[in-house]
Image 1 (cartoon, one colour):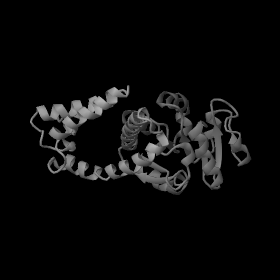
Image 2 (cartoon, helix red, strand yellow; image 1 turned 180 degrees about the horizontal axis):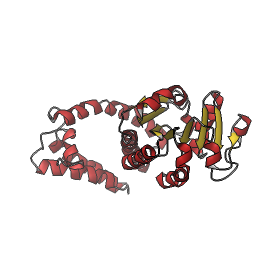
Image 3 (cartoon, helix red, strand yellow; image 1 turned 30 degrees about the vertical axis):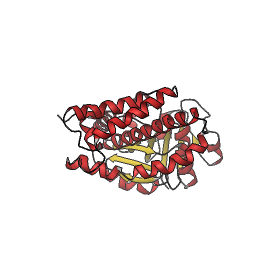
Image 4 (cartoon, one colour; image 1 turned 60 degrees about the vertical axis):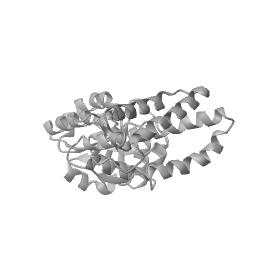
Length: 286
């Protein structure tokens, strides 16, 4: 039986502990606020008074705290006790923070795996949950079956910052999707269309548009931006979207930002190119 220490019992950490207990693991749990997630007690969790107590007999230490500073504050005093153990850090953070933590772990002979959870707490252990991992490949493989209880495990490379990079990039795409959806809903509601009614039109439309993403990605990689709807045409079409937003009292920041990117490309002589060309404005080629 794998002995796990779970440090952090917030909304996500408590669900991570739950699926391990339900999967038959021995789990010692610690949280800064004692008594958090009482439902874990009935599942057989061992309550630890300190992080040191939690990790003492653990083979695998899983951390899911509020941020990198909180994680470092908890782990720094445990460096000697963690020696030889596998540390899986599921705290949301940046690639630079993950690499810094990996260097710290290496300095203290700790096997380090960084993770990015692509799921909400209620999705943990469910079929659509995905967790990205990077860092020590051998440590990941040793504990793959245990980690699979959280969600489908995908190892994305030896660079410990790669899981965080992909996690945050995916979340960035999600933010853009939700921002666009809310902008559209606000416009529709101004015209008397209920949000639920409009969602019935919006969701299939967004599904259809998502099908264009692979072609856009190919154009970015190959630097071939012809074949789609031209930026010169789209920059003009956005005038109507922006005007309709203003008429409805809806914030236009999202649309004017995108139109600004398009205009920059058109002004640079790329009006005949398609949307993929915007990558050069979003992240200029060095």
